[in-house]
Structure formats: C-alpha cells, structure tokens
Length: 407
Figure 1 (tube, rainbow, N blue to C red):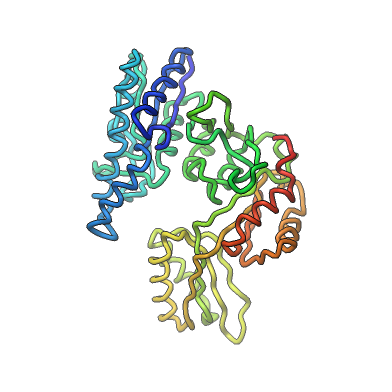
Figure 2: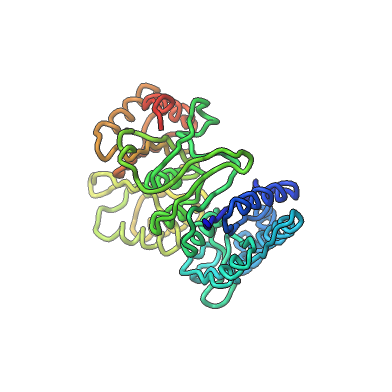
C-alpha cells in the first residue's frame, strides 16, 4: 500500500461541483489501494476577498488578526471536501493546521514550519479515512493561528509528505505540468517530463507560478518526489526530483520571467565602508527580500547602489532607503517599477560554457537593453524594460531551441 499526499489549489476547489470532482479523483486513488492525505487551499478568490475586507479597515492590518481571518478560507474547503467524499461512499476526516499539527515560528502571515506532529493524522489513515488537511496554516509557539504566506498550501503538502514519508506528493493545479516557458507567450512551449529540484527552485524563484519557492526548497531538503499534474486531465505531468545525469545533456531547460520586481537606486552614495552593510541590514530587518545588487565603480568619491525587491515591498523599502540616503549624504533615490527579469535555466550550464554570451547576443539582436545581470551555477538572469518581456522570452526560447529538444 502506497501513501500518497495530494494537494489541490484554489482553482481545483473553486466551486461545489469542482470539490465533488476532486472527491472522485481522491476516491479513485484510494480504490487503487493507496492511503491518501489531501491538502487543500481556500476556494479560488476567497483569500483575496478576505484580504479586501481587512483592507477596508487598514492598509496594514494587524498580522495576528490577518492570520485568524485568512485561515478561515481553508476551514470551509476541508469540511466541504470531507462531506463530498462521504457523499460518494468514502470515509474522510478533516484537520485544521493546529490539529495535525503544523508547528511554526511566530512570524505571523509568513510563518515557517518547524515540525509536524502527525500522530492524529496517521491514526485517522489507519482507520481507513482520507485525511483532509487545511493547507497554508499551522500553530505558533504561543498557540496562535499561523499562516505560511502566499502559496503556503504547496509547502503544507510537501512538509506533510516528508513527515509521513509518503511515496509521492502530487500537486494538482489548472496546468498539466511545468513548461519550457509560458505558453501564453510562446505557443511552441513544451511540457517538461522531469526537472531537477535545483532547476525547479530557480524557476519558482524567477517567476514560474507552478510551485511556491519554499515548497521546492523543502522537497529538495527532505528528498520528497513531487508530481505536478492537472486536476482536469488523467495524464502524467512533471516529476520533480533528484538530478539525473541525462539532464546535463540539455544546455538550457527553460526560460522564466518575472514582472513582479522593482529596481531601487541610491544615487551618488559616499564611497565609504559600512554604508552597504547599514542599508541591507535595515532592509533585512524589515523582512524584505533583496534579489539582484549592483554597485558601480567609485567616481570622485561617490558610487551608485542598485538592487531589486518585490513590487509589494517597494513602499517600505523606499522609505528605508530614503532615510539612509539622508543619513549618509547620498544625492537621492530613484525607483523603477517598470522592469522584468528574464532568465535562462538549466543544470547543463555546469558542464557547458557560452550560455551567457548567447543570451546577451540574442537580446542585443532584438534591440533589448540589459539593465542588470546576475548568474548562478545553473541560471543567467537579465533585468530589462518591462515592455520587452514577451519579445525577450520568445527570442531566448527560440535561441536555445526549446521547442525542439526532447525532455
């Protein structure tokens, strides 16, 4: 008997009819001789609806109260799915995050999972139930309701699969796998059958919306095999797991893009030790993630310091940077939200040279100016003007022949 963890996102449980379809799929998996734990998100649009209600009272709602509010979305879904499974003749028991329990730290609205007490859930599975678990939520050290941040149900599912030592964690969504790039931009984009943890981590962090970044990190750390597949089709999707030697034969596996970043420049900063440390310590202290950082060569005792953050963090980041600019005597602060990051990703880069030069030449031929560059062992990223995003993605997908290479 295999133990399978399945996760269904908001679009998969977006209506009563869809919840019943999920119940049928779950019971088919049970009928194949498996034990099944199901992690579900709130119904599509529900988290946004609740957030809008909170924002009616405050632009910066109390984080603890936000967790109490947002956790209610998954509570509705688990009860309805358990009822749907029972209607179809199955046995089910629902669990909230604190009942499983997902123990987290105290960082409300973006808590991190510390450990999982799965005793109750294992007992329920042993009694022949489908365990229906609320994703996205847990319980803090102080016994408070906690949430894991956007996309947190992916993390809940992977963490639960690790705790239960499940054979596979199936992530069901409205797409049938991971693609070489966004099919909306490039109709020739292909589904990838297998992708390494490292490649998926880069894709997720660079704008691919299939999986939450933290869930990929967790899967890689605990060796959880993840299968991304469609709720609405009965075909295999994309398996995410350990790197296969054959993967290195591909120079580039995918082209990703992200329009959700902004560029902040502190202009004419006095070129003295400690200013960068002061700036990024303050940014980090505000729980703001920084992506790319560039500091120009000093000229006449001054330099420019540029970095990127998520667009949602721009108001807080800009406030911090302006304060430090004033304290250090910098000339000013410039913010540009009309940028996009375009990236080429592939484990084959470890053993093949020339990806960066081909990427830069390709963008130059299309008249796309590169504003910032960053690299890792398996990716090259360029910041470009947002209006050139689709052009850049199309050109790079063609340059690396991703419509032709067998995956």
